Image 1 (cartoon, rainbow, N blue to C red):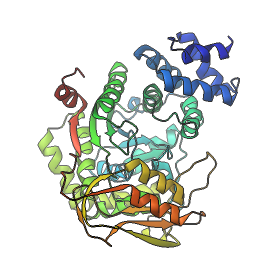
Image 2 (cartoon, rainbow, N blue to C red; image 1 turned 90 degrees about the horizontal axis):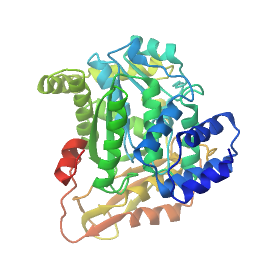
Image 3 (cartoon, rainbow, N blue to C red; image 1 turned 120 degrees about the vertical axis):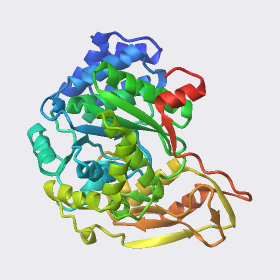
Image 4 (spheres, rainbow, N blue to C red; image 1 turned 90 degrees about the vertical axis):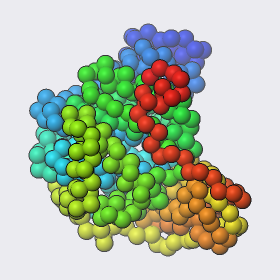
Length: 439
């Protein structure tokens, strides 16, 4: 097969055959396709898209490009969660100890930062000693020991996605729906928990910027999960501003601890509790008693205690005092008074990346002390001179003047108060029905 012809066919909008999709995945994994052809194919898919059948073929080929763990075979009670990405999204670091504290084991195959968003693996890498390279036996041992396992993709699990994930980050193809669906579901199906909740974001800081686009993605993800026999619920949630105030790595670990200690971001707390609730309901629990159990675990300190056990079981040091600190902080004040009318979430995400909390190139080294702390939220009153954000500068050389100017530009200040967007719109089926479409 001449793969240049395959690229040209997709570039021109043709539907591919299953054999062509298989050739792409196989060539990606065995190295027979050069990187430039892989990148060109990704761009063609990003530009022209794939229909549902092509997307399912791509997902299945990526799933079977390596080991399929099927944790549900040995640990049928294990659950899983995934977010489609955003900024200030520290939920996974709170959800894992919360689920463990109520006796529901959770296994997550996490990724590093993608585009303007910071990844769970990068945040965990800020914890000295925290290990994320586990095989199937190691994941099961962690579930039995501390109730939670967070692992990176091994070279043997969905290796096609591991390669494509890194390339998408640096080729401008992150937002493509079929590439998102195949990436998420190939990992989730390979891990093989029987229960899955998905948090699909919409807004200025998300990869899907409108509600209909988020519903399209959420429906596609739920359809694939259902077809593969996985109990799944999808929430559509707001990402028109950072979910939590912290954007970075070590700073997000600290933010997670604040929520686990009964302080911190109200939005992070609300969304984490709702996702946990959906997981327990999918496992057969009644909603209101499940909600009370979760609240008691979070407010009573059980979830905070579970965090230390999880960190230690993964080889890390749970002492928050040893987390990296910024070399210095720069407060960026508002230049005028008014109300926060809008926030450019994507711009803030890229600012955090350029400060050192993410990568512009595959081999960029992270500065764990770097990042951004966003002070006001949409609908808040702000006076001239009050802080919009605190820029955390780490070991990476940065253009401080450029970053501070970009921070100011990311906030729209208006003369009258605006209503903040609703954080949780509902399940994908509920939102689809509200839009007048079918889920």
